[in-house]
Image (cartoon, rainbow over all chains, first blue to last red; front, side):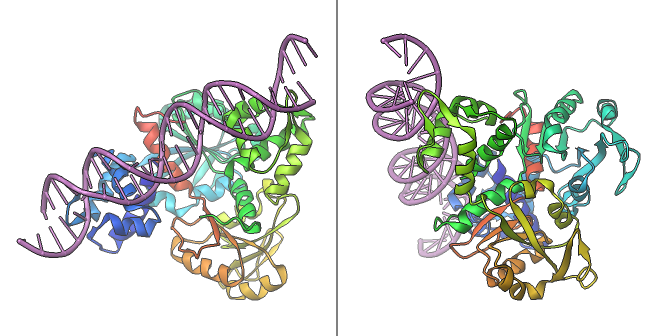
Amino acid sequence: MERLATYLTYLSKLEAHGVETISSAEMAARTGMNAAQFRKDLSHFGEFGRPGIGYNVRELTRRIARILKVDCEQCVLLVGAGNLGSAIVGYPALKAQNFHIVAAFDNDRNKIGRKLWDLRIQDISDLKKVNRKLNARIGIIAVPAEAAQQVAAALLEADIRAILNFAPVTLKLPPGIAARNVDFVQELAVLSFYAAGEATRE
Amino acid sequence: MERLATYLTYLSKLEAHGVETISSAEMAARTGMNAAQFRKDLSHFGEFGRPGIGYNVRELTRRIARILKVDCEQCVLLVGAGNLGSAIVGYPALKAQNFHIVAAFDNDRNKIGRKLWDLRIQDISDLKKVNRKLNARIGIIAVPAEAAQQVAAALLEADIRAILNFAPVTLKLPPGIAARNVDFVQELAVLSFYAAGEATRE
DNA sequence: TAGATTGTTAATCGATTAACAATC
DNA sequence: TAGATTGTTAATCGATTAACAATC
């Protein structure tokens, strides 16, 4: 459920501001969704609120975090130590959401051994061996499109269960492996369409 | 239509490989969609293929590019000259898809005047003035969450029609302004859910 | 002509939302 | 008790897909 993550982001902010209770109506307004949808989304995972009162922000935050498994630290592997990889590792919101990039890999001889922030860039061919110790479940692909499918194969070899793919390709993956694509150039193309035409959306 | 952009990416690759014709069935298989959906998506914009033959790759590429308005160079403004902003400007696939970042802004006195690749970082308070000359229609927000809404307001002031937002907040925008969010930490949270549970998806 | 594949209609499916009895 | 708001059912809406006549 992608929306749960949106809710969590906003709830964390509320919690930091000391808000104790919130109604589905207000949550919906703040995150741009529908109140019934918010309640429905939660209902898949149990009961969270109190009729007539609303939701306890602190408790709801905890419970959604537990559902998304971001209540404890999550280890993540990064493949691709270029500009994008660097920006990812240095992104402050990662730690805030309990994600921890534990290793960075590349295939470039000139990069291997160097530092990416506080990580030593390792040889992609050691991926499997390294993850035998680290046991990360999530991998990030931040390499050029041509190499992405190959890197995905290496990640699967290393027992990765989920892949966040920044390369603009549709990965072929076996069933049971979760994947999400982040392709901001594609998003720009969509915006380009809406910015030009009279067709207005969202 | 987000899927048109996916099609375009793959079609460009086909064209580069010299493929002349492709059927909806094959397009669908390669991009992980349904053949009927592919044909339906196109049908909103006219007729593109020939029964019994398929689609001319070269022509289809051109026409989709025209629909998405990426057939000519698109000017884009960037606000936020941090690590993320730097990775965006330096991203090679941007030029390939005809996007051109024409100006970079920040509010940090230490950054203003410095270079971000080949761009000089400008003062955010000059945004409106600068864009009066550049006339960009699309803006990218790559600033911390706290500042995002404020930056969005400045972009609107400068006559931007579409916003690509990397900050993890739901922007409040007037109708008629297109926006897309790129929030990879949120994507990680979703993956965290699927990687852990037996619930398998996509 | 026979085989392939389109564009489009109609059927299916799932997701969104409105409405409301139950509850604080 | 009266007002508010939940969880959930039922109704609506839109998106996906199967099927097929039209066409190369």
